[in-house]
Image (cartoon, rainbow, N blue to C red):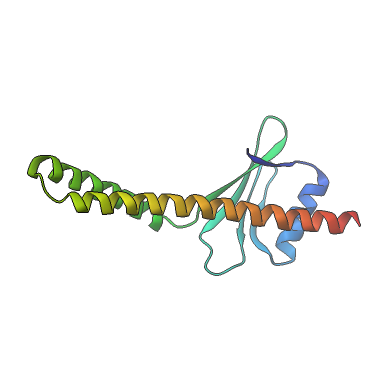
Length: 133
């Protein structure tokens, strides 16, 4: 299920409040917003893009490309170890370790992306409740 925020004055006001209160850095435009949480170390962007239903779809992306490079290098390592396993009938342990590291990196980044979206929606709803009271 995708997280969405309706595009209306109240939502835009709350997004501005998140930046003004120092929870996030970033910018808000008419059709998208991009925020980064004020927490060290934080390697994720929260990006909201306007869809056809006039709602912002919230996604989380890596801010730095280092982890993407690590994934690429892990894939190359698996390919090379698979090649050596097939042709040389050895180094099967390298193949297993490389595959496990790739899966570990993949699942850790997935979990962190979901965590960043959850933190964002929690802070958004907290400010929304304070505005309503």
